[in-house]
Image 1: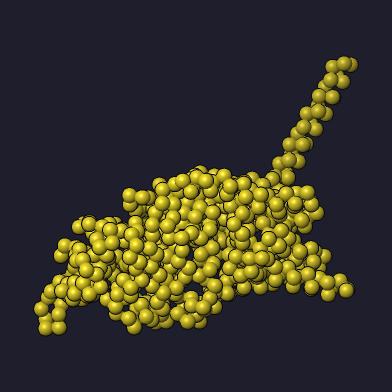
Image 2: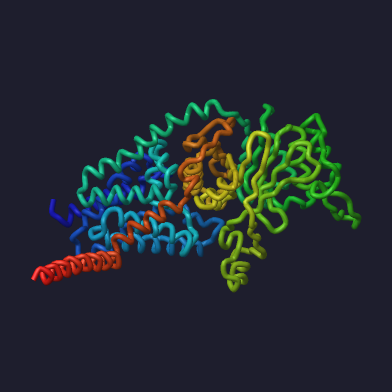
Length: 527
C-alpha cells in the first residue's frame, strides 16, 4: 500500500474510533480512543503539506457525529442548524490549533493547552458543555473513577496526554497512562463499596411522565395529566416522590379546576382525603363562565395532597412566577412548598442573550416572555438527606454542581426534560453527564427526565434500584474542583511557551556571566 492510501486508511480508522468511541455511541471503542485514536490521526498526516486543514476537517467530522442530536429540529426549527454548524467550526478550530503544536510541545503542555481550550469554550465562547474529550474514559466504570480526582477536565487532560505520549513514542509513559485509570478505579471501588452497603437507605419513586411537548402543552389537560401520574404511583412506602422538570403545564399557582372537582377526582382514586388548607398557593381565585369567582385548585393543591396521602415528600419541576423552579412539598405541611429557582438558563429557550433579537424570536418561535435566573443554591432537607436539584443544563456544569456540593448537598436529584430533541442521542449524552457528576462529587445522583433516562446512580456512576443509600464522601475533586487541573495546565503550558524559554535563557546567561566574572576577578587578584 502506497503512502497516500495508507494515510487515508489510518485517517478513516482513527476517525471511526474517536467519533464513535463514546459512552453514548460504541463504548467498546472508548479505550481505543483514549489510548491512541487521536495519535493515530496525527501520526498518519504528520508530514503532509495540508496537515492543519486536514486536522480541522477531521475533527469537524468527529464533532458532527458527537453533536448530531442538534439536527433534531422538529421543535427548534432550521435556524438551530446554524448553531450546530458554529459549534462544529469552533471545536474543529481548537483541534487544529492543538495539532499545530503536538510535535513541538511536550505531551504535558499539549494536554494542558487542550484542557484550557475546553474550559474557555464553556466560560468564554459559548457556555456549551457537551462533548469533552474526556468522555472516552467514561465508557467503563473503573476508568470513570479518575473523575473523582480532577473532574471531567482532568479526564480530557489525561486522554490528550496519553495520546501525545504514544505519538512521541514515550512507550513506558504511555503504558502507565493507559493502565492507571483502570487500576485506580478498581482499587477506589473496592475501598468504598463496604461503606456504601452499611449506610442508611432512602426509598424513591421516580415518575417519568414520558409525554411529548404537544401532549404536555395542548393535547392532554393538566388535570388528566395528574391522573396519569397517580396511575404510575407504586403503593409501596417511600421517602421521596420525584417528578421531572416542567412536569406539568402552567405555573404552580394557576387554577386548574374548581376545588370541589379536584376533591371528587382525588377521591375517585384514593380512599383518604388529606387535602391542604384553602389558601395560596394551594388555591387561587378563578373566574367562572357566568362572571362569578370561586376558588380553583392549583398544582400545589394536588402535589400537597399527594404528599399528605403518601407520607412522602414530593419534589416536582414547575414554573413559579417567572422562574423555572424545583418545588418540594413535605407531608403534613400547611406553609406551601420550598422552592429552588434555576440559576443557569438555556439561551433562547429560557432567556434571550441579545435583547434586540426579541422580535425575531417572537416571530419564529412564538416566544413572548422568558424566565428569570435564580441567584441562590437552595438545598432541600428531608429526614434522610440534604439534597440539591440541578435543573437540565445545570446538571452538565461540573463547576456549578461542585458549588452545590460544597454548600452542603449530600445527594443530587436532577430534573430534566429531553423531549425537545426527540429520536436523538441527547438523552444518553445528558445521562452520561449525570454519571460524571456523581463520580466527581462522591454522591448518589438521582435523575428524573421526561422522555430521557430516569434512574438513580451510585457514587461510581452505576445504575441503582429506587432504594438508594444516603452515602457520600468528599472526593479530592470535592476539595479543589476544577481549579487544580486548570492551575496545573497553566503551569505546564507556561513552562513550554517562548516567554518561559526566554526567562530560562536569561537565567542561564546570568549564571554564566557570574561564573565568568568570578574567574576574571579571581585571576586578577592572584596576579
